[in-house]
Image: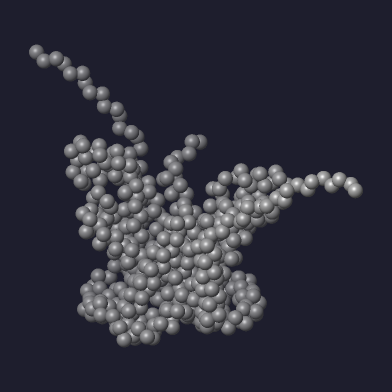
Length: 273
Length: 268
C-alpha cells in the first residue's frame, strides 16, 4: 500500500455577494420592458424589411441631393437660427433676475419656492406645446417660435442660474456685505464676478439647445428649416429632404463647434502659447 | 502744520477692459439684426394687439381643463409610456458596445474610434422630431417610427455621456488587465464594464426622463402616443382638452423625474 499524500483542503470560495434590491429591481425592469414590447401596438414583423426600406430611402435622399434649393434652405436656416438667438436673448433677460431671486440668501423663502416651482413646471412642458399654446395670440410666425423658446429657456436658465449662484464661494459675498454693500452691490461685486463664466457658458449652451429646438418648432408651421423639411417630406421629394438634412447637420454641428470653443475659452481661460 | 500723507499708490487698471464691452456690442448687434423685420424675427405688435382678445379666451379655456376628456387620453398616454420604455431599453442595449468603442481607454484604435464618434455626432445633431417626421413618411404612421426616432436620439446621448465617463475613469485597472495578458476584448469585459456600470445606468435613467418628455410630442408628426391627440385637439382649438393633456404630461414627467433622480442619487 502506498502512502497517499494528504490532499490539500478544498478551497471554498466565499459566496458571491447578493443584493436583493438589485435582483428585485432587475426583475421588475425586465418585466416592464417585456410587457411594453408585448402590449405596444406595433407589428414587429415590419422590422424584417425595415433595413432594406431604410437603405432604399437613404439612397433616394443622399444619392443625388437637390442642391438647387440650397439658397432657400439657407434662408430658412437663418430664420431658424434668428428664432433661436432671439429666444435665447429674451430668455436670458427674463431668467437672470429671476434666478437671483430664486437663490438662497437673496430671495425671500416663499418667492424662492414659488419661482423654483415655476421653473420646474416650465421644464416639464415640451417647447412645441408652449408654442401651440401661445400661437393663439401671436399667430404662426417666427415670433411664436422665439417666444416659446424664451419661455422654455426661463425654466432651464433659471434653474442653472440659481444653482451656480448658490455655488459661488461665500468669502467675496461676506466681504462685500461687511464693507456695507447693499444687496444689489453684493450681487454685483460679490456674486457676479465668480458666477460670470458659468453664466456665459450655459447661456451659450442654451443657444445650442435652441438651435436644435427651433428646427423642431418649424413642424407646427412657425417657419424656418423645420417647416420646409416637413413640407418636402409630405411631398415625398426625398432628394430635397436629403439636402435639407445635410444642411441641418452641418449648421448644427458648426454652431456647436464654435459655441463649444467659446465656452472652453471662457471656462478654462486663454491657453499659454 | 499737518504731516504730509504719502500719495496713495493705486495700481493701474488692468488692460483689456474694453473686451467685455466689445463682446456685448457684438451681441447687441446680432440681436438687432435677428430682430429686424426684414432680416429676422419680426415683432408684430399690432397683430398681437388684434389677437389679444382671442388669446385671452384661449388662456381662460386652458385654466378650465375638460375633465370629462380623461378616459380618451388613457390609451395614448399608455402608448407614450410604452414607446419611452421600449426606446430606452433598445437604445441602452445598443449604446453599451458603442460606448466602449468610442472611448480611448477601451478602444486604443484611433481610426475606428474616430468613425464611431463622428457618426454619432452626426446622429446627435438631428433633433428627434425631425427623425420622427422623416421616419413616419418611410415606415408609416404609428408607434414604430416614434420608437426608432427615440432610439437614434438615445444612442447619441448615452454613448457620448458614458464614453466620457469611461475616459475619466482610472486607467490603472485596465493596464493591470492588459499586463495579465488579457486581450482588449477580455479587458473591456472584465475590467472596464464593471467600472462603467453605475454611470451607464445613471445615463440610461436620464435618457428615460428625456424619452418620456419627447414621446409625448412625437405624435404631432404622426409617430404615436399623446402627440396624436394633441394634434387632434389643437386643430379643433379645444384648449380645455389641451390643458388636461398638458396637466397629464406635467404629472407624468414630474413623477418620473422625481423617482429617477432619487434612484440616481443612490447610485452615485
